[in-house]
Length: 180
Length: 338
Image 1 (tube, rainbow over the protein chains, first blue to last red):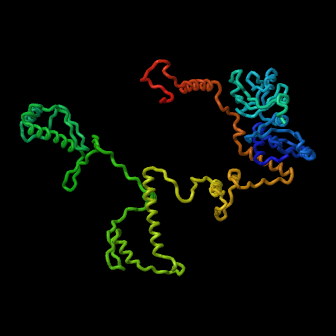
Image 2: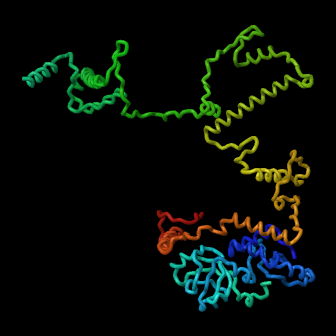
Image 3: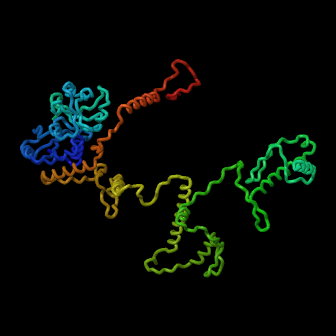
């Protein structure tokens, strides 16, 4: 369990701001206790103070995971969010996309969202903005990046990609072993 | 009656050997007063030319010059000191020139500076020789005779300062003169380079053009110092020189200062919030402020884009050979085969 260096913390926070913008401060400054980032084997964990102290009892070699895994550092030094971070992203996200129930499954299999699958989108979403994808009954399904802004979506043809897939909850099954 | 009179007068004039100032020509003569040029386009009288060439040409020239002078008299005339003067207008006829008009010499750096500051650089005529009180003779301002005279004059140097007594003052003076000479040569060459627009490497201390800020300068200095085979181990440091920050990774052998470990989680949290604040403040790329304005124009713009793409596609088309037909004259793109 390592503390993140300043550079790495910056990378993580920059990535998070792409999705939740100014709400990133709410993740750091929480009323229910102190939360911090810890790194182990290139994975970044978001841990509360309580759990951290408990984890110190466990032999670090045997420890599989603590807190929430937010993502990992790639070999080239970039930070990549994992689907496990969705639980913390979804409530704070500023731009959302709702998909039709028919397109839900397509997305959960790892496909991009085309316009035909789009049900609703937050107004004034710019292009290449990080968004969280919700089902019609407001269950977060994953996250991605918009391929078109809200204005462009209106005029796009039905098969055009609206949102690029980055992670979805189907990964819990599909890539169970690589997630942690 | 007037008409008859004028005709009679003309008749008389034509017969008169002392011709009048009025010259009649079939076609109007073209004149350019600026260059005092007259162009006569009338056909020559070949008969007269063959029989009396000298006479004919003289009379023709007289007539034409007369017309030119008549034109000059039409100009506004002034009287200056009993002489009648007319100012000629600007020339219209463009005289062909064998060579280019010489360009003005580019100013040297000093001349330019003097011009900007309004310093009068025009030298008063300097006499070639100057009277020297000490030697009691005329000394030339330049040349070998002057140098010899100065050698005579300065055969002895007074030493005011005891510390300087040990030094060879003659050698010092000679070295200083060499220095001045080489400086002048450098400036001369620099002026030539400037006039011909040749870029030359800058000499002297680095300026703002080299390094935008002090951090860059200190980084460059550190890297330069450590760029020896022994990683700068035997290089002397300048007074107060410190290693540049943030380049420990690039410079071998330089130790990175470890980040200060936060004492407790509260401090770590504080640091992280500060970091987040900085990111939110600085990174406009992540948060584009003006969401209300769409970045691209929909529908119509897209159509245009497609058209543009098609046109581009044609341009990049891969060069093909003659498709079986051999045409040596046709120019075909592609690789040159030897």
